[in-house]
Length: 392
Image 1 (cartoon, rainbow, N blue to C red):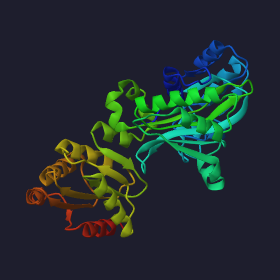
Image 2: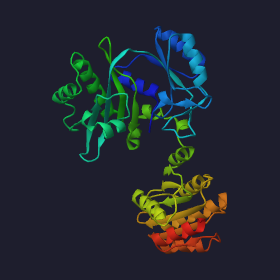
Image 3: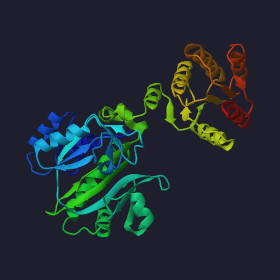
Image 4: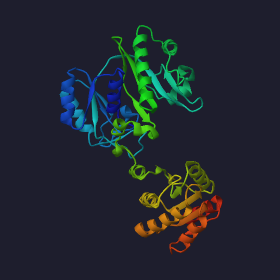
């Protein structure tokens, strides 16, 4: 789950991470009021979408830049009117872009230095890791490719927590001197936020040092562990489903794991590992998967019906491959769901089904007696070849 920058600022304020004052606005009038409330001369108006590269983005109405410097409340209102309700295209959104429903109006600061800072989970060591670079404001991927020596890493023992010597080490590596104490406070507050909110990533690009020697988190991107959100209803309430793929939203509401892809062969599989293997074997035989869809180990008939509705709602889909290995899952439950789904929503696409495992004979019998057109497959390879041939 991602959140908007203005929501990240709310978390910053809660945990004591210093950042410039600002407010979100849903209309030009609210942007004007926010600027008046700030009561400063130099302001920044930022489009709020779940995508990076906003500053270099272009709106489909021709307006350039999703981050704009302005000098008055009137200017803030005018810029907001050009952003709100418009589609912003950045290098991360693709040509479709993202519709801007909110902007954030903040006070501007005069920057003397920019630092990249992130905390994320390191899978190799199974610990939180702090990644920082003096090349703030740039894409960290570019820095890693061009100047990898400018990236510093510090793993944090999850039991001991962030230690003072680690903060001093990072301050020295990043060249902090008179502002080291401020950066240390920011880092401790950010780490506390990361742990207590069950984040999988917090990225600030940049942390800035101002000309009057203040340290601020200027921009932020958050990811949260979806499996821990039940502990954080206040964070779950920040979810903006308008920024998500409608198919993924519908899947999550039905307890399914779905990710849309660009191919034309839809997959319905139980288990993430099997789903990955299914997508791989489709590509091996020359096809392109249209989605990752894991119905899990204990899917109900209703969930299978919901999965079919989501799949058939994608106009790119030209064929469906169901690949089920029944361990905990009952193959007959899947078969019954397939039959009910096709009767409810209709099916004119090729459907290849491979069932194996728990109660498989009953599942095959249910499909055979249903009267629906099913192409049976005995193995994964057989199933993949048949669906690729069917959509060719």
